[in-house]
View 1: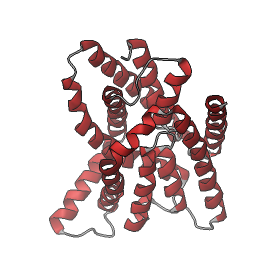
View 2 (view 1 turned 90 degrees about the horizontal axis):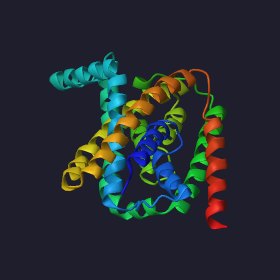
View 3 (view 1 turned 30 degrees about the vertical axis):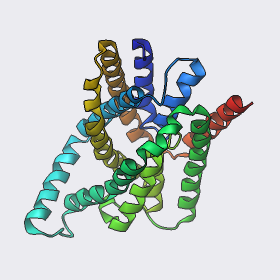
View 4 (view 1 turned 30 degrees about the horizontal axis):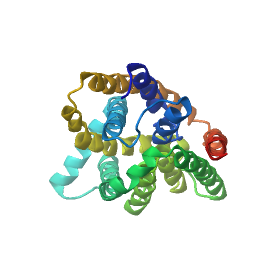
Length: 279
């Protein structure tokens, strides 16, 4: 059972932590344990609840980048019509990069969803992986600074680079690792600026989260308890509100800033909570 108050808190948390590179799944597993909430985190409803909040976040991203998606979708259809991706058609290239980058996470999610479900019940594991997420963010910044490549544009990425970023996105299947963080690191190491890396990360997250929601949201209909459906709705609405303001903040933030503050946060919180649980 998730109460309305708990649903709102978890929704607000998800909308922020999904887009910040600090792992929404990790925080959704850790916070209830810290607060002593009697929530069964490996219960199918809790997972569907999280999918509902993720769907709300993906919807906000889609609306926020609506003009981009219009151009991208039009570009994909142009390339299909002429059976070619012209070098001058950056929107078509970006569209196919997103498709290619989405495939790895989609396949791995379908193959290993049940195997990874056990992690949803373990706050200790989520805290440890959150610590490792901090190391990933630090490594991405360190390796990028050592690289002498100049910042490129998203459409200049190769399809192989898009696959690598997509594979990194798959690590977010484990609570504690961040989808945004992994794709930011992969994009930075592919030569993109922080600002373009964030845009590519948000565009890449939209179809994979949306696809997961389409598969799981119908499961809500199997729950006859209206209070459960109300909790999912409250969580989704709360996630949408926090996600909107988070997107606006991050777009401005990454024009001049780096991943370092988020890396420090993950190391301190992940390490501290790990010690707390295992003491």
